[in-house]
Length: 375
Image (cartoon, rainbow, N blue to C red; front, side, top):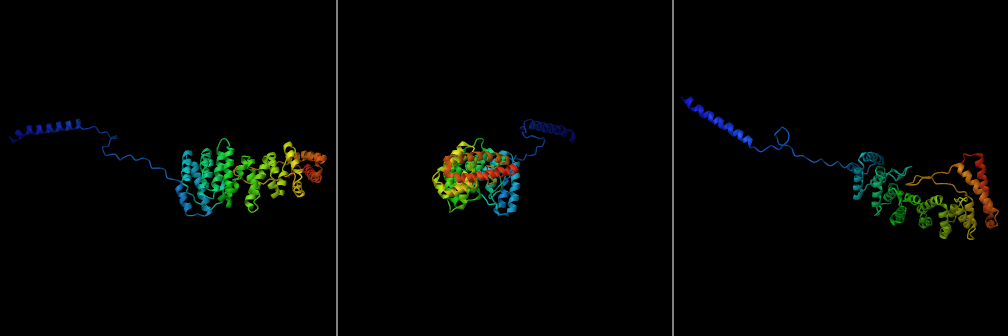
């Protein structure tokens, strides 16, 4: 009897439990998580920033490595920077340069044939040099930023080169002004670095004949052979590229003629007397009553002066004249000088003209015998 009385109750309770369970599931808030698992999901983390590839190199240079270790470290870093997306490489370089931090490398400021450096004296100079190959336009823009404030002569030299090479149109006025500012900086001038001395090449690149007064002043510095030599080389190369204009300026520079008479005379020996403008300048210089016998000897002893100083420069290149062109030049200027010697107006300098004719006869004869020879 006990079983018969309790069985309906058990079934009633079981039915009530099942109904309650169905109602609980029906009204349970929807699970908004994705996936099949009901386990809690780990929070999503943002990607970690890319490590600074400059940091390991900086640690190396803080420890003052050997030149060999510096060269190896910079060579590897150069490849790493070149492998980055251009914008990222520029951003990393600009970020470091703005910070003002720098470290010596133990290497020299060494210019290669293409105007790029083969060695870098500081970490900043390495970055400036490397950036030109990665993004010339960005290198020019950063170069202008650096040139707004004096940093070091080496940095300014590279910044000037980057502006000159990285911009589509040459801003000659800007480059000239900033190069003259570099040259005239008292601190940099007192102890000129290799970069300082090589920055003079920018004046040649932009044809800055109006920088002649600055160069003239340096050449007259007999107490500073380094500055005088840099000024002379720059002026000499300007004469080769812009002879009529530059020689006219030298003819008017009495102070330089008195200070360096032989040097000025040898610059006039670079004139191409086939050109009427250069003829006029040389004629006026030779027949000037103030001209001394020593100056005329210096002039005639090297005429025609086609010697060139060959070097690796930041921007310009030196190209030797082919022997065939020199032979044509010598024959044609010989005719000009022979006509001068027959002109009564040149009577005061007849003997110097005779020396010039003798030299040219020797050159034309030797070149006729050996066409491959060079002066």
